[in-house]
Length: 187
Length: 187
DNA sequence: TAGCTTTTTTATCATTTGTTAAAAAATAAC
DNA sequence: GTTATTTTTTAACAAATGATAAAAAAGCTA
Image (cartoon, rainbow over all chains, first blue to last red; front, side, top):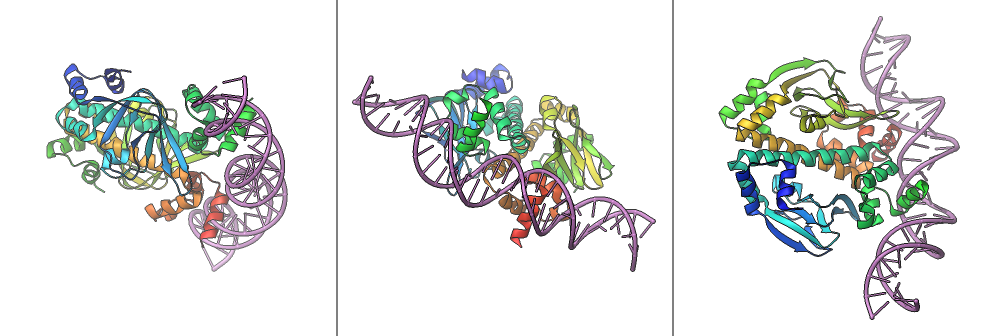
């Protein structure tokens, strides 16, 4: 995906406003396993995924818990850093070699203050993330692991080829063994 | 809480911009049990809670699942309606007789287009809701029901006096029987 | 392809949570 | 204050999930 496509997919912008954002974007590439965002740090980096797959996870006392997958067109940032300038709790790791567009949060925020179209674009950005986050919360709260598994795969059938079942099990909130049992039932 | 206090708590606004919002707000009151938001409807209403307690829940095949509690200063709306103009899945019910400030989503959106301060205020509104929603998701995903119970009560100790344990159990994602067992363990 | 590593499945047993029903406690109505 | 009604706790049993370990399958590398 091109930078323009990703930016416009959030909210179409007038040419001048679009250009202001594009001017601040730079293209970067990192290998599989690289951490775009580190937990317990204040992160000023925002990425848009041009190509590749990522996951966000938290460390708990004895394991990691995956709670987000990102793919082409997705936005990578720490909400706590972006919104409050605080340290975040998530680590965001690349699951494939990836190409990304990068912008500094501080630069984006400066644009919010000077351009109403970009301010509303930023509003849309967080609104969409909000709806997606709420959907995940509600799905988690009143659907069975089986239902959530089917929903997840339906939403992105490629996921099975790009992400290990261990990560998917963690995302669904069950052990890998339980996910195997679920998959065995479907067959 | 006054309307000004609630509006400014999201993001301080210049006098003129603040006044534009206040001009659109009206004060309303409804009794305990009233539904502010109805599921499967497109809702154009946004409320700020002046006084009272509310919960959001979804109907499942055989029961209701509570997934949000709101109190003084909280914002009441259907994200799906507000953001996409679609029908929402949640019903929002008053748990006490309540006083609220009301505004139409369409009026607020018109202000977003004409006033950059209000556009950024709207951005902050959804950003805060986003962080709160993500916190709930993460809390749900890697904390035990016991930990979440203690966290919830710590965050709002009054909750125990204002909300039935059945609703709290539903919010935590366990049955009321399990919540009773949890509470018995703490003692 | 053979051999090595990682991922996924299967099996067994222990633990947790759910279900149902009844008792106890707290609230509300008269 | 007494009686209903609702809410909360407790008990007993069933069902689902977790933990551990081993087997099978899939992916990598030379």
